[in-house]
Image (cartoon, rainbow, N blue to C red; front, side, top):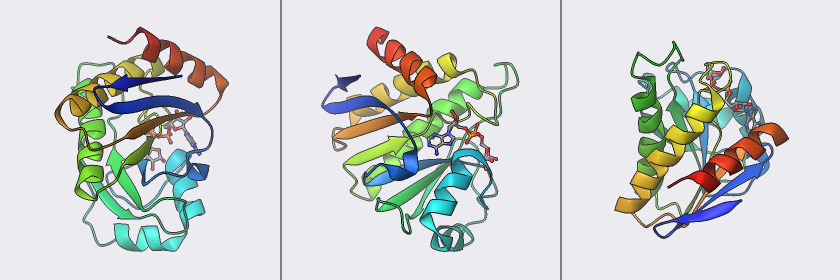
Length: 176
Ligand code: AR6
């Protein structure tokens, strides 16, 4: 499933984000930037130790913000580490922080001259953000970014499993 936001193609794909070739892979990291489980663990395992070496040059990353490092052995030029919010029920500015993850990651990708970017579904695993709500926030933030900046040609929303891919595609289809 794909559609165009302004001049950028936005597609939902199912699979392991570490296997997909793009200029920049976004990582759902934590604020310490020292690796972890979930997609973060998969990215560090597949990319090798040079990613952690570069993360260590940073004194962490606040929630909602993003930093770029090498992609090591991954089929990409950069990993963009962003820190999603933990879901506490929705009254602690979770949506604003999640929107900021997508927006700031795309800004980092543009800084580095990237034309294609892949995102996992940030915060919807260990951080418990409800998947449908998170997908709407992601798409709204991406649409806002693409309205202002046309330099990214392709954005891949990588869903882990057929159920998430199906829901994400339905939400993308409904999206205004
Ligand atoms: N490819 C694509 N998506 C994946 C992959 C993969 N290889 N593996 C998991 N997902 P999570 P969070 C999906 O928990 O909720 C880490 O320990 C998964 O199904 O990775 O932002 C960090 O260090 C889910 O939909 O990230 C942090 O401490 C989505 O990726 C914390 O978890 C995000 O799940 C961040 O939690």
